[in-house]
Image: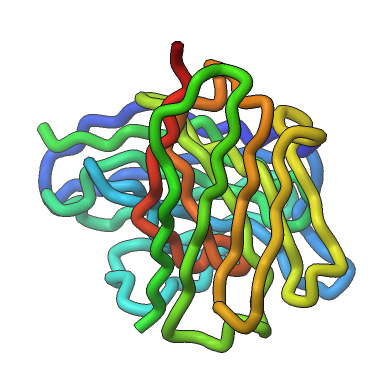
Length: 112
Length: 114
């Protein structure tokens, strides 16, 4: 199984400041079709997870452009350019190249 | 608008069974694979099962293989999770999710306890 490792486990951010979360996979997520199947989700308090970023860097419909994804192969990053109060919650990365699907352990983002 | 509505959760004794349902709407159900993902209280996300759009490919996590069965009904636009031989460690909120987890339902809570 592919192991997904996220860092840090928690983050406390001043509103308006940037934040960055790292996700590393134990195997390359680059498929033979040329796509890299790395996804980012945010689970706000008391809610279901919601898709933010798919295939490394593509923002899902309605996701603000302060969220951006980057990376390749086994190393990936989610960046929030200016954190807002509504961004609090737990962020998860997930690999979509192989079954079983596997998630990172999550990064909890709080506002200072 | 895509909607996924789970139901069927509840309290069950160890060794018991439950059948979860997920009713889908707002998209062409027959085009998409479906998944079940669970989350124990205060814990992370655990993928547990996948079924492709035609039901020809089905996969399970090791933790549930042999005890849980996923299925889908295109006439009812629904996906199901039959859970047998339930254990304490199966206690969680169970979510259904479309495709590569594009959309998620609100979840249904399963509690396994005597």
